[in-house]
Image (tube, one colour):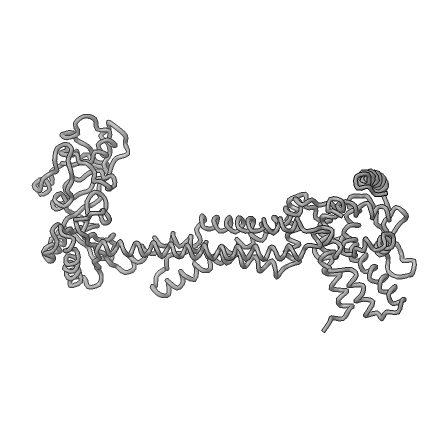
Length: 108
Length: 485
């Protein structure tokens, strides 16, 4: 994947995972890993800054909530209205992009 | 031996949140702590010991500086220059040893250059210090036949010249001039040429005036002036102190004298006396513009004595005879040197200055190359954090800008430190002069221009030598780097 293609796609991946419901960091990593069969096996070193970036741009919202297993509070991220709108846009762009590329490179 | 995993965890949390403030720091720390707890608990459930689980979690998290880099970018937007500076400052703190090495490299180069630049100013003060503290007069000797004009000063060649007087040095007058002449048979001409009078225009032209020298008889014979109108004044004019003057053609023009200058009169600044122009001469080839000459009026201390010989081979014997006389009368307080000797010394001084400047330049170049190497290594090591920035939408230009701002910040610090090093070198030099020669030294200090040059040099060099590392940093393979994180 060329850098321009990857650049910005992390945002789409994270928004898509969080869209399914509030998630905390470790959950997001696990889900990204499992749903892509290990392709996006990125480490926490790149995840947390990305989450905070999205939160700063108000696409997601982070809130501490008690752990369901009784441990320390976890920070759950959920989509904001702006995030949902952005996700829809990004999905559209991505679909358009992949269709265009596939029609060129001949993927069936 | 490895650290206790708990301590490693604490260190990780501290490093990952370094540079963050207030609520942001608290939020990130709590979030990461929860991450540790959840992951360790999960691993322990699957059978790992607590220690092994902590180690595994740390390994999964990756280097703390990657988290720190990424978070720092989020909370210090590089779009604004101020934020870029804050980002650079954070990098400075996160990579303190590395940053200090770069600063030291810049500072050493700049320090030497600043010290050398300030030495140019010191040289003149040192010469003045030598003259005033040693109570010496220096005499120089040269031949009249001066084929290559190397030893001709002004419009007349000089043989022996006294240095600038000072209160404690031996004083000279016309009687001393005669005594020198009698003691040195090899000397053909002995004369006075005192730059004592500033002449104003006659009211017919510009008021800038010209400098006129008071001379004695031998000067006219030694100088070989060529007259385009009139002639030189005579020995009797000098003896009787007649109010006559000869001017150069340039001086006539500058004074705004129109028509035939010979026979006209000019005034003297600060005096009502009027002097009649008796001749107009052409300046000698290669000589500087000289106003003119008039009979020397005895009285007061002479600043210079001049001795000339016709045959260049006699220069050394003239010098020797004059030196013998001077030493017999004033011991070591008067020195005599030939003009060729002084010229050689001057050439040697120039060569020395050139060599010092060359060494300083080579030093700065080596320092700059070192800086580039260090910057390059710094950028390559940060490949992963740069990749995270890129994946979050930062363009190559953003990355380049940040790295350049870092370079400039380090350059500024290096410039300030380098100036301090330069000042310390000069202070040490001044202090050693004080201890060796007494007095107040030469007051060696950083000059403002040297200071400006130092800081500009540091920032310029660091900017220039950050450019390549910045380009390399912004072009690293994003996907390959990111997947290694």
